[in-house]
Each structure stands twice: as C-alpha cells, then as structure tokens.
Image (spheres, one colour):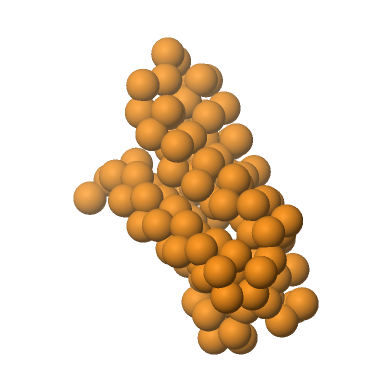
Length: 118
C-alpha cells in the first residue's frame, strides 16, 4: 500500500471523525466557534490530499501536500485547545489528536519521499 493511498484513506476517515466530533460539540456542548475552525481545517486535509492526486507536476503535488500538512497542524492546534478547555473528554481528545498526529507523520513522509525522487 503506497503512502498516497494511506494518506487518502486516513484523511477521509479522520475527516469523518472530525465531522462527528463537531456535531457533538455543537449539539451537546453548544460550542460553535472553535468547532467550526476544527471542521474547516480537519476536513480540508483530505480534500487537499485528493486534489494532489491530480497535481499538474511534482512541484504542484508537493505544494498541495504541504498545504494539507499545514491544515493538519492547525487541526492539531484546535484539538489541543478544545481538549485543554474541557470541551472534549480527555480520552476522546487524545484519540483524535493521535489520529491527527499520525496524519502529520504520513504527510511529512510523503513530502520528503517525493522531494528526494528527483
């Protein structure tokens, strides 16, 4: 299984977790501002990975993956903030953050590998 395929599947599964987490935050915790930020950045990762599949060049692919990496890093921040402020149950926040950090590692590996194949 290639890294690109793993990134596609993991980012989609992660986006679904983010959507469900945001639904919970809005319906159960009445939290709307931070959850919208989490929803935007957390779902953008997978969209950018999918967009990179049809990149016009290697440089365009790396650029799109870099943007996905930035969105994943931002998502990690929102999860951390929501966890620290008590909106997430500690176990839920840790689990979501672990998935996000796994995506960060996958994206970094893809970028490094693609850059090294010149």
